[in-house]
Image 1: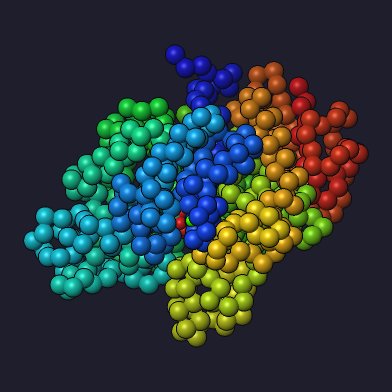
Image 2: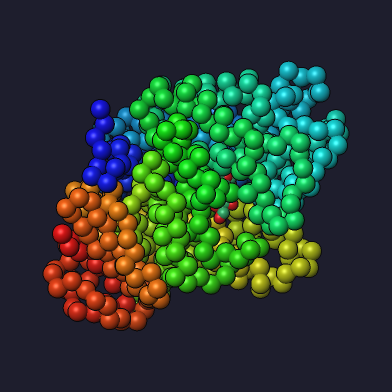
Length: 541
Ligand code: TEU
Ligand code: CA
């Protein structure tokens, strides 16, 4: 029988875990070809282990033509040649287990690469047995748009149209075909049988399509993800996947729930429904996006309200996650903190404190423990992301936006901020060759070595979280929801309670603080007021 916490949560290892995301292309290059690889992760495993994290999430490491940096898979059972060999994967997995950690991998099965054998066959003729692995139509059936811009339908050689909710090189699989579902379950078993501990599931709510293919409703034209995530059979297919595969292993799953409302979240993660363990909710990272997806200023009040709403919407059958960053988002210090030389370190530590004291499984993105920042992009050729390149064509090429307006926005929102290779030393230290993508030019100042104090702060917070179930399972209570500068909340479990106080500003602020000594903070002492970007954790009961 599983144990239950005093406030009613069933205890599970993945609820207590801290997850660290590796984007392998940019982590560490072991062989000088300029591309991060699996041996590189192995060589730097002590860096990850030293933080005290429990689980590594590895972004796609599969064979891919890399139209979308590996989120376009050509062969699900093959390691990308640039990342190494299957032997390298097995060695890495073994080393992760020896170090007492677990590994989850990316499951990207809403779509494949157009170079996947299935699609090569599917597009070859209308009679091909694989035709029905994808979604074809003899005319352009509706006005759906790709998340990356432009129409979601592209014509194949024979004149028929195929659906791609992302790039035209990422055709969507037809999950209504049982043969497709069987293929997916088989490839999941292939990796689980090697010993991987679960999956992060890419845009998983998009797998079921409304085959009546209606046009987008007017009010969702700018946010079609809320249409795509609501197909008629998504829950049937996830329940089937759970029954056929997941329930037979002791693993964790986290779905990227792009386009899923808070109200619909329990349908995916309520443990009684046996679909997914957890999802990523996007509300927190959408506070600085306007209705058209462009950057807008955010306020602490809006940000805090996200967590109050989330707490109210999820009961003890649903387990939340917490993330502020990943390979699709800008750097947290530049976005939610202050990346000026004066406050960069303190605000990085404050954001770490928030991440590691909230209820829910926390996800840390590589480089956040180094305090990495956004860069200032000034030329379209400095970008790698196909999304940004499409947007350049669509917005600047068409004369809709000036180049200045384009860069101003991209410097706030671009996915490339997170994708630059990690600066391990003041010399760069990522590769002995030419990096596949330029490092942030500030690597001489901002790197793993200069970020040591931030790293140590993460490690202290993770150790505290592991020692204190109240920081994992505790009841959440925002004690100052209307305070414009301070984020302060309690976490209470049985007889134990913590108070977390965070000054989200560059100004000192008076706040009613306990007169005890905090158990953790990002300044050495603790006067009666809060200094800029000060973060404290108090044990109050
Ligand atoms: O992301 C889904 C996705 O649409 C995000 O890029 C989202 O638009 C963004 O986070 C909003 O801020 C997943 C992968 O994480 C991403 O890297 C892939 O490009 C995409 O799916 C397609 O596989
Ligand atoms: Ca390499």
